[in-house]
Length: 142
Ligand SMILES: CC(C)(COP(=O)(O)OP(=O)(O)OC[C@H]1O[C@@H](n2cnc3c(N)ncnc32)[C@H](O)[C@@H]1OP(=O)(O)O)[C@@H](O)C(=O)NCCC(=O)NCCS
Image 1 (cartoon, protein in one colour):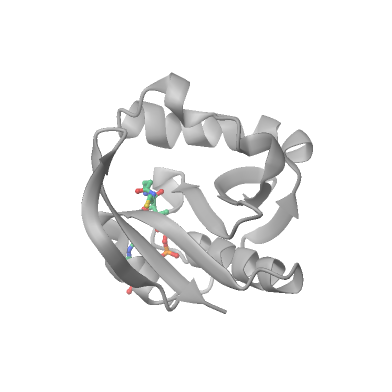
Image 2 (cartoon, rainbow, N blue to C red):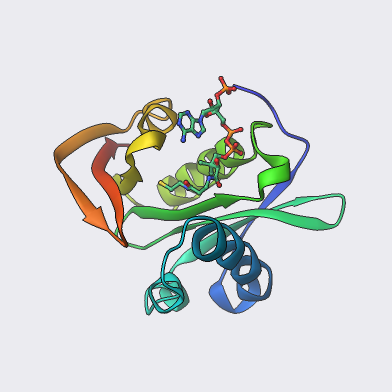
């Protein structure tokens, strides 16, 4: 696993949205074709958000809901395969554990299963369609 020089902060939606929204729109709406109205949702204001910063640029984001669900993991294309998503995952898992979360879960895009397995997530249940993309539920105990 590569180690990135990016710094990771965990923020409220109020603090994070100006940075997180452009990245999520670029990656999920523009690159992956997720409908814009599904991308930002009512869970955002209640979730914690990781933002990754490198040389004053925000290059990645992810969120953790209070029920242990991790999602919206996105890194700008030019900064992928440098360990940025891994650093955000580690930061959110640590933060969640410190805030009493006992079990984490997520809906993984099928291609990303091997990525999440590195963090101890295990596939659970059938493959399903979400926003037009095949997903797999994965769980991890703390
Ligand atoms: C998935 C994503 C967040 C990974 O970000 P990243 O910063 O490149 O991830 P990292 O550098 O921390 O980890 C990369 C490692 O995971 C593996 N990996 C990442 N995405 C993968 C995928 N879709 N399939 C298989 N392996 C993957 C890489 O092969 C790499 O392995 P290596 O360390 O041996 O080189 C990024 O590709 C992205 O934003 N994709 C579009 C949005 C998306 O699909 N989000 C996930 C939704 S479930």
